[in-house]
Length: 190
Image (cartoon, rainbow, N blue to C red; front, top):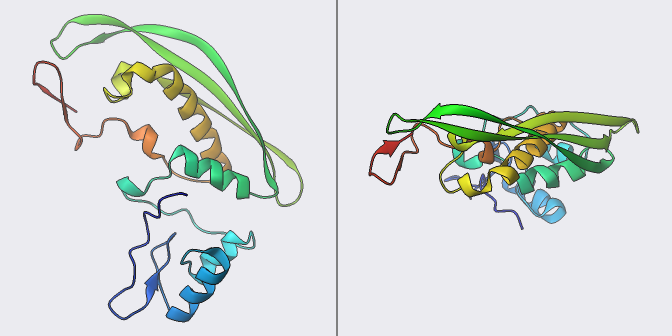
């Protein structure tokens, strides 16, 4: 089950908050939503959940970005459904980068192309294609051993986001300026 990151529980007035858009909802709307969707949704987000409405993309906070799993689940609900996701490995590129100690070192950048096939509400086939890459400078040190898989995941996520009209995903942010790490010499890295 996907963790419900956006639901903040009842507000001080006894009402609830929509799990998707964080708008306050009445107890009656919350009860209806819980009975039918098993999660608290405002009326507009209920329409979207049923495939009857359009919801403006939200600008989520850092910890509320959709994960890969959430994007795939959302894609299955899109239109008349997700048909397939195909990936293609592209030739890796080598480039030179500067290490924290100032030395020049050669690195590999892994690249993938992903194509998402789906059927929209009108029954038409749609294709969404995107590319993803990963190298030592755009991943955290925990992901570094998994560059190949990260490049493929990024390509898939970008194609899914094109289809869904979503913003960035958590996996893509990598090292943020406020998320410093220490290298083996104890130096802080962004």
